[in-house]
Image (cartoon, rainbow, N blue to C red; front, top):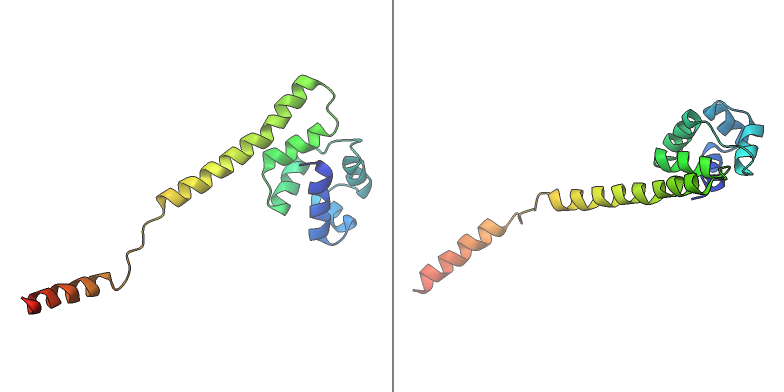
Length: 123
């Protein structure tokens, strides 16, 4: 995702860009520079932003750095952060589904005993 999208999501949640700037501890000018890919946010600011909008920290840090990174090798490394975070999230979902305890129907025991009784009566 583009850094501009993360910032706009946070601005929407905060209500105003000024309020977001207060939350992040930076100026509105710095926010605009990050949105326009003129500067990247510091790692600590990215973490605060990610936590505020409940996004993966690594993805926000990578998006911020991708905005200004020119070196193709470094860009590939940063881009890999998006697929890694998505893979970890997908794995966590699969694991949670597979490890959920199976629910036994509440009336299953009653039905089985009634069925058994019917068979005995019928004999």
